[in-house]
Amino acid sequence: MRCGRAVSHRMHMNTNKAPKKFCVIGCGRVGIHLAVHLAGQGYRPAAFSSRTCTSAQNAAFHAGRGKVFENAADAAGSCELIFITTPDICIAPVCDLIAADGGFNENSVVFHLSGALSSDILASARKAGAETGSLHPLQAFAPYEPGQASPFTGINMSVEGTSGAASLGKKIAAALQARAFTIPTDAKILYHAAAVVASNYLVTLEHIALTLLAQTGLEQARAYEILAPLIQGTLGNIASKGSVDALTGPVVRGDVAVIARHLADIDKKMPQFSGVYRLLGQHTLDIARMRKDFPTEADQEISDLLKNNS
Ligand SMILES: NC(=O)c1ccc[n+]([C@@H]2O[C@H](COP(=O)([O-])OP(=O)(O)OC[C@H]3O[C@@H](n4cnc5c(N)ncnc54)[C@H](OP(=O)(O)O)[C@@H]3O)[C@@H](O)[C@H]2O)c1
Image (cartoon, rainbow, N blue to C red; front, side, top):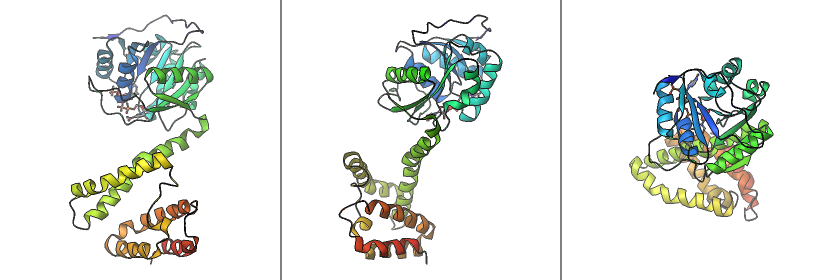
């Protein structure tokens, strides 16, 4: 497949019908998954462009159809539905370049798929008359491999943007068998911070737990086997009871003596975790205070223990 020539004409969108013919700019993990799994759901992959021609060709190959363009504005100009799936840092500059080259018009609907950025960064497309939105899949994408299950199935996707883009974003999510939910444009970064805490910091937390357990002499792999049912059970409790009622352990029981002994041993043997144990303990105490069964007489003593690092 060769890189195609610039197209000189624009398609004109029937405003009563959502555009189905789409283009992907930035053909990495998300771009390829999106093209492959939207194709065949009533959407038609028509144009691909990437930093390298090889990636665009690879995406077109896996999607089963679509022309490859060297110039992103030519690719965008040939479709009304445009996905910019470059790394976050490139989204605004790529959008600005396409706009400067006349790749958007009043029939264009432009999305990016970043979690941390809002549709505001597509301002240059908006200025050209396009509808603009962000459509963020709450999923960790592995490199595309043919035959694997769709990573969009059953996940949640946040949508925000202009009204036309937001409503099309929901349809696209539904076509991908994902659940869309709307988020205010100015709340996008806090939403992303929540996702980072829920996923990335959970990994950090479990890593600390495994390191503490390994300090007892257990092998790291065995340490995970031992903790795994506890971790799964806790997640199950959060799902069934909510985060406040799922809390168990010494803080919510008001067991001052155990917390004091934890701290004494961690301070002595693994002082690098003294700070995180105390900080998370303070937030755990905040949760415990929301519980009717928390023995409030232990509150002050636990609070003092968790504050002091002596
Ligand atoms: N990965 C995830 O798990 C995940 C999850 C949710 C959302 N997202 C979002 O999805 C978007 C894409 O992420 P990704 O993981 O798919 O990234 P990726 O695998 O690194 O792919 C990005 C692609 O963009 C291309 N590119 C880079 N600079 C470009 C430019 N100036 N012009 C045109 N193409 C360019 C690269 O091209 P070449 O290959 O041609 O060099 C690469 O293939 C990001 O906004 C990210 O935040 C990612």
